[in-house]
Length: 394
Image (cartoon, rainbow, N blue to C red; front, side, top):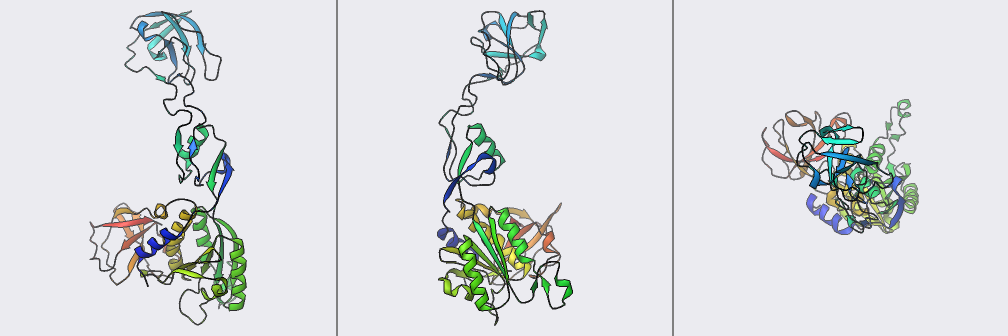
């Protein structure tokens, strides 16, 4: 059994990005660039006005100065006429600056009567001109490979006049829920020996949240030959296979055994954490296989701690990008102790992080209220009300 940090280090060193594909801009949100984005145009593409007002020569600008109006400039419109001494062009935000003009005086500081404009108020120090390529220039590197295409990056991608993006493929995920006691949600109430199978649904939602594409979902009883067949089907369909249940040492815990005929090589098996010690990770036939405990809380905690960074690495990001630990303040004292790294489920209150009512690894009701995982290392002293802790958004 290894420690949490050692397991994360092994994962970071082992995972490699998937292949690349080119997708349309409208399909690029949430994807990760595998190639940098280079600007195809400058921004702005010419000197443009930053305000609605009047374009003129700064040399002529003065309180009370009068200007002959010679035309107008609209965004996307025809080029305006050239401005000479004591001439002005009516201009609107984003419109091209006339040749000869180097300043815009805002309309609030001017008065227009017939074809004469007069500067009637102090117009301040601003010139209100966005210069050519002041934001970025053609051929500038705008976004590096490995950048997540969040809404801000998508806007820049479009602003760079790029209709497509080259990104890492989304990881294809197959999930196998195991256990004789499991029934499809909506059917368990008819048999008191069965429980609704809930873990795979939560894990699938988390996988999608971190960029995966769920391509197959299976449910299998504790029958080893049948589970081996499911393992083969899942490996043929996916880049990552997640097995829920069967991760401990019970007589019918077949999580790893079902992959024994598929060249399973373990990266780690059991980690000194609580909850989720039985979690394991390996590769079979070049595919990643992650074994999660069957208890709902344990499964979701270990998925957040290991599935999320695995998916990040497969998409060309750092595995640590998925584990953005932050300092948080406790709303109540916290004592965990023990020889394993503990991850306490907590919600955020006005006073700080507050552990949810139940820390039971099999709980689901309290789990739904958990917004953060609070890390408590082995041997850590009791955390006080004012103590700072490392927390991860759950």
